[in-house]
Figure 1 (cartoon, rainbow, N blue to C red):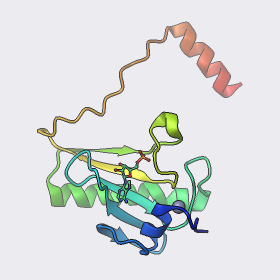
Figure 2 (figure 1 turned 180 degrees about the vertical axis):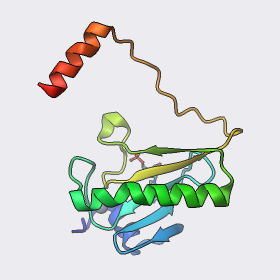
Figure 3 (figure 1 turned 90 degrees about the vertical axis):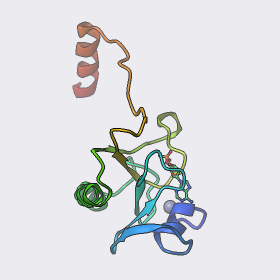
Length: 136
Ligand code: AMP
Ligand code: ZN
């Protein structure tokens, strides 16, 4: 299903031009307009899912194999030194476009990017409590 008001639906389905680097029946992979590094790309499903909470299992199952294929291909072609795969859900987590997408971010020893996560500082007891909440 497409969402008439969604820009990534239009891009994924070719109604708005994009710098496509891969396409199949289910996905289009495009270059990000404001890349974090050279080659930063986005995996877009052609159907509309707002985020990871909503994506259907069949589509979700195809995402990681595609991310792997793209990472291998792009690493070979771009000569990057590593790779981040990132996926944001909801505004608090940095999601700005509400059509599920996966960031493919080639990393270079010279890129001066910092996609680091400072630890929030939890005690062993706090970790135990969080585990109990999740599995309880
Ligand atoms: P997120 O913050 O995870 O929702 O990521 C949205 C990403 O989409 C950002 O990295 C934007 O630079 C990128 N973006 C937004 N609009 C476009 C567009 N029209 N074409 C390509 N990338 C876009
Ligand atoms: Zn959409």
